[in-house]
Length: 150
Image (cartoon, rainbow, N blue to C red; front, side, top):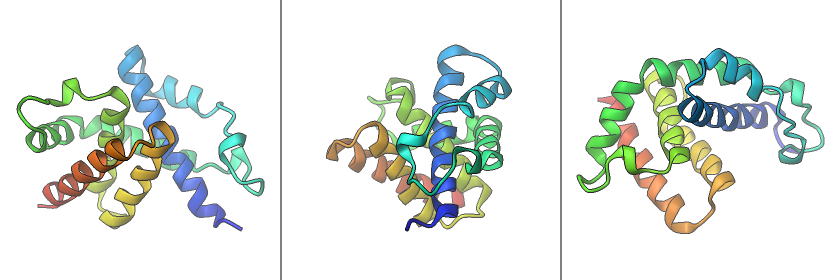
């Protein structure tokens, strides 16, 4: 049996990434997007013992808010990590959302960096499980965690 608290937090992270992607794509207020994302049927992504109502909506909202609040810092830090030929604006919007959500969690500092990286690698795999994509995200998140801590 999967630890249901861990799974609810993992799903909250996935929802936060989806919300950040939607906010960037639609330019709608984050409150509207988070409320809409909360209504998505995630039953196919969950173990049978986790109910959608048990998803950590507070964590989802916190991650989205913190990512938006810290977006300039997170984006600037991410841009310094990426090569000049590959600025953040050229990165797939889902990956930008992953970097922003993970960066927000790293800035908050309440979750160990290795846990944050592992969680967002799992989120990455939900969208794109190609080895090169996962390796790329891993490298960026590793450097991001170091630079946001200093």
